[in-house]
Length: 314
Image (cartoon, rainbow, N blue to C red; front, side, top):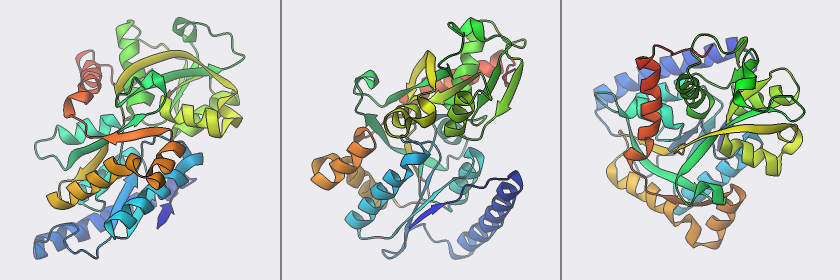
């Protein structure tokens, strides 16, 4: 089942977040009373959530295909949920409301580095394009309008910067670290605004409603190939990275044997015709087991914002 909840107005987002907060209290209380593990029954569905993507919103059906494939191979129903903010998805993982998450690398490190982690690293995709060096990495693209006069990053001083989310690695953590590196922490941009998604950031730059943005290279690549209406109106001014690619994580509430089954199914996708076809549509070569150290550069960039007391891009 595919549920794509993408509220247009902020009030709708607040209502959804409130509802999941109530659900959290219910689930937490139920778990304490029953002391049961997530997915304890072979008939229970697997709930998968997605925030960070290796395709854009225009290709979200690819995820539905992946999860149907997983469900078929495991003989389980799979529920796919998307459209929530990074923070809401973190709360859902904490509460055990979802079992598997395709999330951004920065939220992963924030969850993993707590005293009692609520997620574990499961897998990471390796993209087909040669620039990803056959490794689970990606980049942050600094994009501007294709007809703009901006040539160098320094030319962007005094411009309007838009970003997707404050805890996005490619959209916020990486450009913030770059500003620290070049000593621009006292007000580089004239205006900073939040778009809500990489796709919206691309659209805003393409339509001239923002001068510059930092977007996920995976989303940009997919749109440029499959949905180029806005992407082709922009150009990449600078590439930041690489960094560890947005990983697939699993809730610590999921039993170990089921984690292994999910892992095996995803790793094996490129070994049969149906699975390989789905991966090709997503521009993914394969899924691989990843290691936590692949995300150390993300941690280091985040720590810089504390060290230099520069948490908010300005």
